[in-house]
Length: 163
Image (cartoon, rainbow, N blue to C red):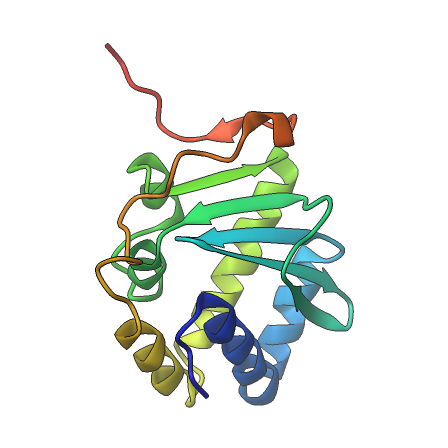
């Protein structure tokens, strides 16, 4: 499977986990269910709605519980264990919006996903395709300016400048 776009990579990784790590896939979906997540990776937006049956992807989501803005490089650093979710936020490489309870659930589900993905036999090929598909025009170490604050009543989690 080609993983040029983030959506292709994410869909492929969900398929891999469902097939090769079914208990971890079910655990991930159970932890984050019944929420929707809107991910903005560089210029691409992907929505994922989780329920007891699994993860369903779409191009948009009307009312996501969690919004994530991140660059491809930060995703790869998380997968490679070169960065933590907290480090990514504090270094302003990732922006998260959501209620505190939803963000805790997102963290827990993400940890299940990452731990299962790196153990799934087919994941390295998928990751290699995603890693190789980035170029200098779409690969960013920092997210674009945060989501429009009018889109959400939740605070934006990011480091504050002191000065």
